[in-house]
Image (cartoon, rainbow, N blue to C red; front, side, top):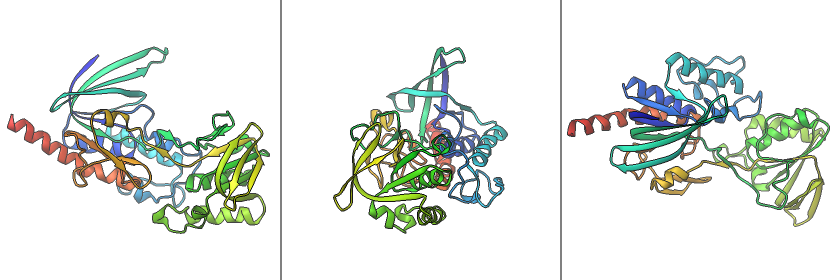
Length: 343
């Protein structure tokens, strides 16, 4: 089914995509947001009940609009805030619809193909045409793997949701960032016999700008260690995962085999840049992973008419993901008006 011409098609309904949709509506653009999951899907994948690292002013879509019970909002409070931002603004967002292909046959024309599944399980395809594209996709499409034997076993998880299925069981958490530290803390606090495998440089890192774990995670984590409920192993690499245990090499070169019932491999994730690359957008190594090359002022990529914003660019914090579209969407609107006038 063909939906005619859009001024701007936004891919992704996270904080960046929502902010872009709001800005597009204010600019009077004919826009649409396509989201393969749910509104703020990346936030929804955070652990249940998690308290966010950031304060309300760094997360809210409108100043003073987010009112958490505590100092910082929980996952659920933030999700509700983003959902009601969409509802209150009547923003045009299609959820559960995935972009499967994009063609760019001529300037000012992108043909976007999507697919969704209805309540009867039937596939539905749609085609949209747009003058501009804004990729506001998340950075959690592809969890990073250790690429070791046994990592495909059912007991290995690349996402942590909640500790309760593992009470009184043996768990190993591999990773050095906040996600891994939080998982280890939640598991230990709720009666899971937990071991955390972390590189020494990550364990000793105290620089927030270099990805150090937040102090409000580290302090209770260290308390769990001091009270004997959590073990930390400074490791070099994981050798093998079996149904009963995990063998790893410590930083001193010693091989250790650790019995466990579940393994959480939480070593980061990457965005899916497949469509951007297919369209000819240049990419380059970023601080943590590959990112698209874009103009730092306009956020336009090497392909005219394609823009990027959000967590998968170098602007990895939610506040930047919200603020950037408010700057670039008016620029997109301005470029569209110039194009119309020139014609």
